[in-house]
Image 1 (cartoon, rainbow, N blue to C red):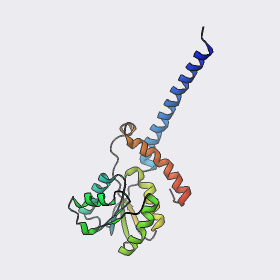
Image 2 (cartoon, rainbow, N blue to C red; image 1 turned 90 degrees about the vertical axis):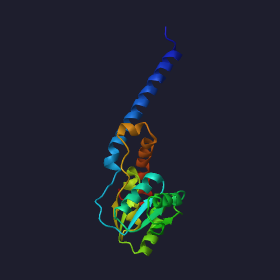
Image 3 (cartoon, rainbow, N blue to C red; image 1 turned 30 degrees about the vertical axis):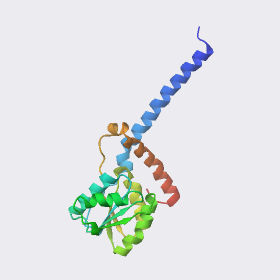
Image 4 (spheres, rainbow, N blue to C red; image 1 turned 60 degrees about the horizontal axis):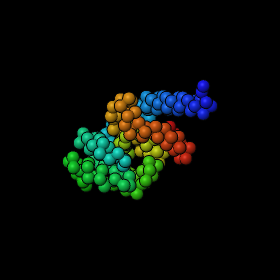
Length: 195
């Protein structure tokens, strides 16, 4: 005979399994939709400056350096407190002259990256800029920069995804992608960015 306590334990275990499966389905759907909903890659034209955001430093630095070496723009602006000097160094180590790389190291988030970079870009006389960030961060970042520096023509050249949706589920990338949905909604409400 099954005791009420044993029956309750089985129901609790079944509920836990269902919750885990539902969570997995939500994560898989979020990751599968991410390239459509979060990823913005635009056609590139010659620009005045490459703006690379702090955060995931080495891949973003490599992307910015490759763009510079390909002649996409004659200057680079690194924006982001915490790792701006490291990203500048990484870019310079690839042969990009240190004197063409400016840094903005006071910003603590994407909105501040855009807000604090806007006057620097204006002082440069920039009219066209290429934004470099992680692929899943590109929609929010581009919206912030378009909002704070609307006088510039913005292009997006993010670091490309590093693997399939299923590979991302097993790495920290998956968590960052899922967090980005929340951040995109928050920035839309808090800063009025168009997404």
